[in-house]
Amino acid sequence: MKIITSIFDLNKEIKDYKNIGFVPTMGGIHAGHISLIKASQNKKSKTIVSIFVNPTQFNKGDDFKQYPRNIKKDIGILEKLNVEYLFTPNTKDIYKSKAKKFNLKKKDKILCAKYRIGHFEGVLNVMNRLMTIIKSKDLYMGEKDYQQLYLIKKFLSKKFKVRINSCPTIRINNIALSTRNKLLKKRSIKKASEIALFLKKVKYKSKFEGTKLASYLDNYKKKLEKKYHIKVDYLEFRDEKSLKLNNFKNKYRLFVAYEIDNVRLIDNY
Image (cartoon, rainbow, N blue to C red; front, side, top):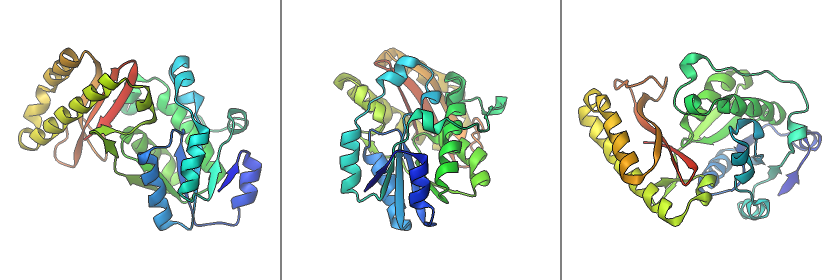
């Protein structure tokens, strides 16, 4: 595996390759990332993984500082997976040039965008820069961060003529895998597992009750907060394609975000 740290060296290395799959990450490589890498390897001749903890998508400075980092461990995992390229740029290099700024409209300021002001603008900013550098025609992303996936498809897929390959969420003990999970205490992992099972039952129940269930979904939210002593930002049913609220005519998902041990967890079912 070649580890590349500069944009110049990366462009020089991959300029002649057209069949490259791109897996963007912020490190803390886990089974969810591995599933994306394997999906790329099954389709593309070469795979490039990026590790870049993007400061512009963090709402709080402390959150950025505390974000789990272990580059040596990540490199070991990626080498075992026979990844061809690892791109680990620094912040100065990524943000040295001017680029388009993204501003979400009111209709997009829902779910996490409502509670994490500027987060997705930061995500779109860095993905715009990374995709400009790497120029891959296939991007691999997980469905756990479904709103992120939705917005990247909406704002960037046509611009770069890229296929956004979405891969199912990987869970352990019912909990969606996330690098942030490493910050959870044991008792909180148990709680998160129970919460996930509860929400799966709510989703199953919605198949029979639909709109009626949505009308008293706030009661479930309060029940979770009281029983598990957590703060739930949102618990909502939304259409998969448009993220329209309580649209049960098409495929839909139950979206949740809550805080436990000062760690924000998100998921969808």
